[in-house]
Image (cartoon, rainbow, N blue to C red):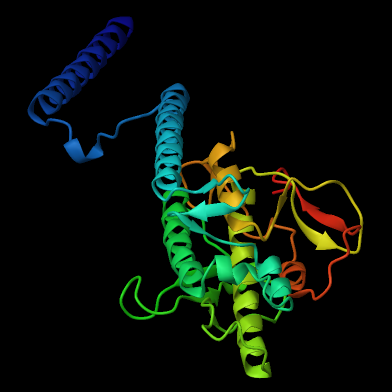
Length: 304
């Protein structure tokens, strides 16, 4: 009985071993004859590799931003130099060899016979200076990637015809001044009739809207202390919001020139960060009588 059991166990072991050998040969043949599928192979990126890739992209973007910043500064300063923005010996600002009186003086001097600044700066010269100024501001906004609250443009063919201002709705906190305004001084400015006075008032209003846009442009590039005369006395202002050529000169010298823009590449600028009210600028230009003791509304470029 013991011998039969031993024979049975030996036979069972041989059968088990034979099946194991057959399975092993089958697996070996399958592995050798069936290559792996390429579409099942996927690259595995570790966390460290991803972090390194992100850091590399950030470094490239930073280097690109520095080059953009340098290009903006070179282009802006070159353009302002080409247009000849400077202050002459009489402390009056000029562009392209033409004087541009501040709008407050233009209006007030109309009431003083034979003492008008307009006689020293003819209407033709002022309009020509305004055309050059608009061309310069349009160049600067493209170089700096800045959108203005009121965009100056020319009807029809570029740089031909009377320039107009159109409001950019997201910038405005008022329902006023949303219609286009013509930025052109009438040749009848020396007359004293109501129609001529109204035309000049419309021109001064359009100039005030344009001045507000230039003030916004200067503020966006780090020019501090931009203000207009008001009844509330606060800190001393560095530059009037209505002195557009002085604003461009300050912009050119700003150490933060080119750092902020409305498009990617450098620091993004919030559209609604400018606190100077356009109504205050218009009122400052149109005010009939100025009090020398009045204070100032101030806007700092650090408030974005």
